[in-house]
Amino acid sequence: MEFDVTYDNISVLEVGITAFGNEGYAVKYDFVKKVIQWRDSYMWNNNFTRSLNESDYKLIKEELPKSGMLEWMKGYNSGLAAEFGDETPVAGEWKITVEFEDGSKITAGAEQHFPKKWKLLKSLIERTTGCSFVLR
Image 1 (cartoon, rainbow, N blue to C red):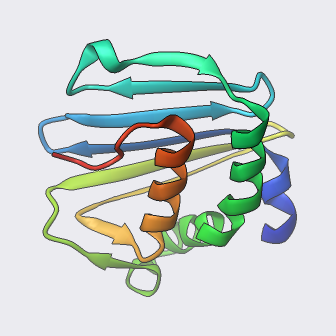
Image 2 (image 1 turned 90 degrees about the vertical axis):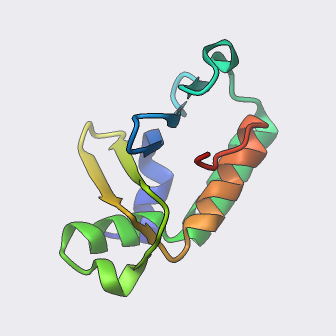
């Protein structure tokens, strides 16, 4: 998989974090429809679906490759979690699903083990949604 090319071919990106009590957040970016969906299991009235404005779309396209997300997703799926992430005392988990323009998908996730570059992805999500992406 050519990672420098596939970031441009992402059509849908879904990122979720949950605590062991199934509380947390999920965000879905649909780059084809230009829509963001936010789900907050702590506060149901904080859920929304809105259009993805052009500046946020450009920000995601520019910053997402810097997070190395596709590379560490592949690493986690290949059993290289220790190389791409660290164990944490945080009682939670993450899961990411990426769908490409050709319909292919890649999914990765882990419990109490977060990628080393997680903060870059987390910051990008917070900047484009205006919401906190931290487990309570």
